[in-house]
Length: 181
Image 1: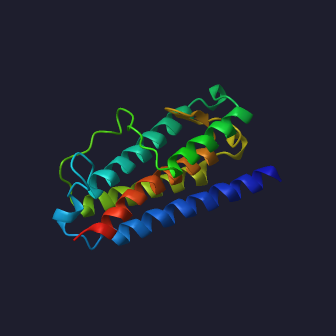
Image 2: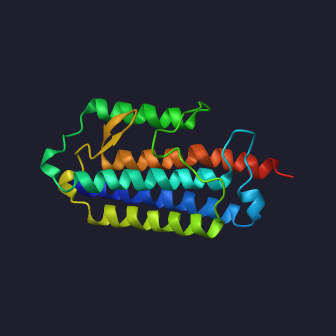
C-alpha cells in the first residue's frame, strides 16, 4: 500500500537524520569549550552557534506542524509543484550557495556549552521521532509544513529538508574540524 511505503520512507529519512546528528555530535564532543564556541571565520558562526541554529530550525518546524495538526482539515493536499519545490530546496542546500537564515532561527548566543546544545538536539530528535510515530497516515499527502522559501511541503519532504539543512551545516562544521590548529 501507498501508506506503508510512505511510512517506511518517513522512518528511513528520520533514521538518516538521527544518524547524521549523532555522528556530528560525536565528532564535536572532543572540542574544548573555546574551540566549540570559536567563530569559524570572522563574522561567521561557531560550531556551537550552528548547532543552536539547527535546534531553532527543528523547534520552529515542529511547532508549526503541531499547530497545524490542531486543525488538520484545513491543511491543503500537496501537489506536483510541492515535490518540485522541495527537490529544488534540497538541491540548493547541497550546493555551496550561501543563505541568510530566516528571522527567528538566526539569533544565536555568543557562548553556549556543548552539553546544553547536545541535550537540546537529542530532545529535538526525540520530538521528531514522536511526531512521526504519532502522525496519522491519512495526512501523509498533506502539505503540513510551510518552509519560508519552498512553501508548503509534506511530512516526508519536511524530514528531507531537515536532513539536507543539517548536512548543509555539517559541511561547515567538518571544514572547521579539518582546518583547526
